[in-house]
Image (cartoon, rainbow, N blue to C red; front, side, top):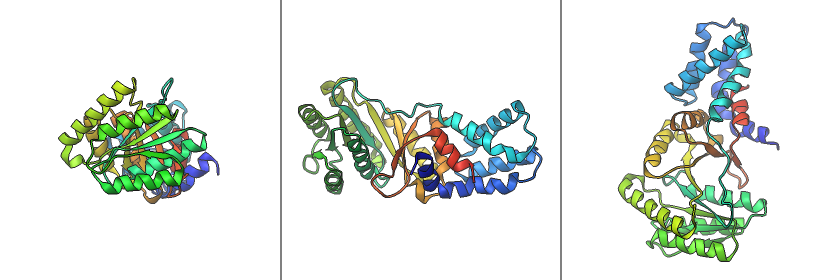
Amino acid sequence: MGLFDRFKKGLQKSRTTLAERLGSVFRSRKLDESVYEEMEEAFIAADMGVETAMALVENVRTLARKKRIEQAEELPDLMVEAMSAMLAEADSDMNFAAEGPTLVLVVGVNGAGKTTTIGKLANYYLQQNKRVLLAAADTFRAAAIEQLLAWGERAGCDVVRHSQGADPAAVIYDAIQAGRSRNADIILCDTAGRLQNKTHLMAELAKIHKVAARELPGSPHEVLLVLDGTTGQNGLNQAKVFKEVVDVTGIVVTKLDGTAKGGIVVPIVHEQGIPVKWIGLGEQIDDLQPFDARAFAEAVCRP
């Protein structure tokens, strides 16, 4: 299955909310202000929020004027173009170390799919013949360590861990040493997700940052925030809070196959300026996909 087909299948519920709803609006209608109003309502219903919905409609309106479009049924092409451009404002490519292991911190609230995302990322890079090492730095929950061990076994890579309650920064320290000695290409690090105690989380992540930068200059190379796509606008709020706590470099949106709220991807990029780098389109180990702005826009804007 090609990339576009994966996106189209995984984003079926979001496409129903947006493209199929607008399909009936656009059919055999002359382009006028009422069409734009209904488009804006559809964008808001897809969980893009008012600010992003208004900006996107204005961009479509500008393209329509420029191309002298008069019929509403020609708007899907413009929607794809406008949404692709908005999503491409932030670079979705992963940042890798020039030499030595690339260190990726994975952050997010408990329940967002953080540990599962790490397992799927490990599988993705192992399929590319990369040497992957996992670090169980969410030492607050014994279940998180056990879950990461299970994913490490399933994907086929080692896990650096300490006992529950250990210093997370010490786990990162050991993971970097192990990564060097084992010639790892990528070290994927799980972290605690106790957002209700923001001060403690900030201190913990700051210490991890300090140890990582000291032991592996230039790291962490990525800080990926995992958001549960089914939470819609609440995910946007989480992005705002985590951005205050830590320098988030990219977003992973999970569980998009189970929600009609896929539009939340757009305001994350447009309003927060954080690139979406991965999206989860199913429960299988290979259903985590690198984000593609054009494929996403095509999948949600066309019936």
